[in-house]
Amino acid sequence: MLECSNLKKVYLNKTAVEDISLTLEKGRIYALLGPNGSGKTTFMKMISGLVKPTHGTIEYEGMPIGVQSKKDIAYMSTEPFFYSFMTVESVGKYYKDFFEDFDEDKYVKLIGEMELNMKDKVNKLSSGMSAKLKIAATMARNAKLYLLDEPLNGIDIIAREKIITTILNAASDDSTIVISTHLVDELEAVIDSVVFIKDGKSVIYGDAEQIREQRGKSIVELYKEIYG
Image 1 (cartoon, one colour):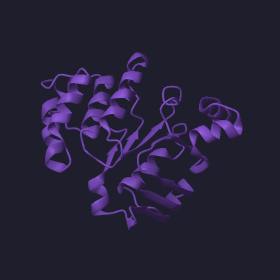
Image 2 (cartoon, rainbow, N blue to C red):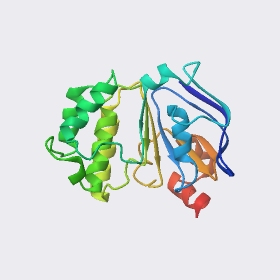
Image 3 (cartoon, rainbow, N blue to C red):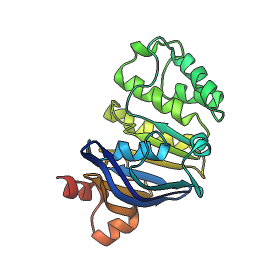
């Protein structure tokens, strides 16, 4: 579905991503792992077309990132991206105006599952409720590739499992999901592939089960070993 080759991104004198090459396959769930500042967000923004690589190439279904890929790729950033005057309901209308694949019925269903109220004002939501709203708006698109940057941030430990289940159920069987996080424990049971990023470089990448077998360790144990 998507192939990255020798990706590099430099901001002034700081290298955020350096020489990452990997392939994202259709229908798989990827965990993009690493602590804050490791390069996860920059990598996702390059795939979504928001940031141009300094070096290297990205191809989506055989074509460079561009207008068509932006129609198929749903990116959820860590930053808030709703106007404070909006309500939960108007966020759905806002998304409907921007994205042809936005499904209003799906949005209503997800808002219910997230236990949010359509009449609530965005600026009155707690950090956890705001995080749920971002997830609902993103997953209400019928996208082919979902890029979720730290979707569990602000979500309490009790709700995380439900949120992950909601994300997985909202995606179609042939869509691909990439979840960046430093909260590894909650994702280990559901991911197909894993990418460990450290100092802007991919240090381990591949099928999660094969990595466990080859190294004799869980993904959580590997995370502690790499970043501890």
